[in-house]
Image 1 (spheres, each protein chain N blue to C red):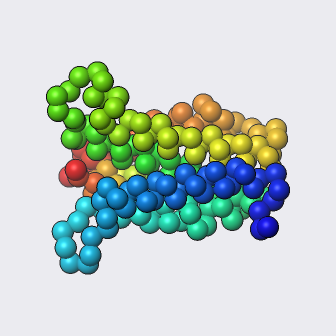
Image 2: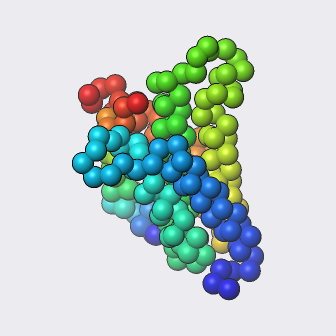
Length: 31
Length: 160
């Protein structure tokens, strides 16, 4: 995992996933 | 005992906080039955806390997986804080004054949730006493608090 995060591809995959998830949550959660 | 001796108390503390949060969420908004109208916000803490209760203690116990558990724990804290803050902003307490902002919103719950971030940090420092360079420092977490809040706000206000 440490190497995955240090690697360029792993870093981008992780960040793309988190950003997409947060955009979706902001869109989906309506109180 | 499955857990390492030096980590046992920390992991149990984290587990108790997660279990308490899970039960508290279940009391506030039980997950709806299939077919009934629901809010995705009802499923998120239920499933995330289930992972935090069942998987994260074991992930934090081993050097190979500690970073995965640490990240699930930390990102869960940030998402929980952002989602609960957005709930309080969408439905502010009435009447709105200084004491109700601190006591009648989700502010106290966000403070309790943030304790998990610091416990995770102690567990990580147990495996990497020198830290991991420029990642996972307090400033790194602060920056990611801001980034994740911005991504949530963009999804909320622009993607409608």
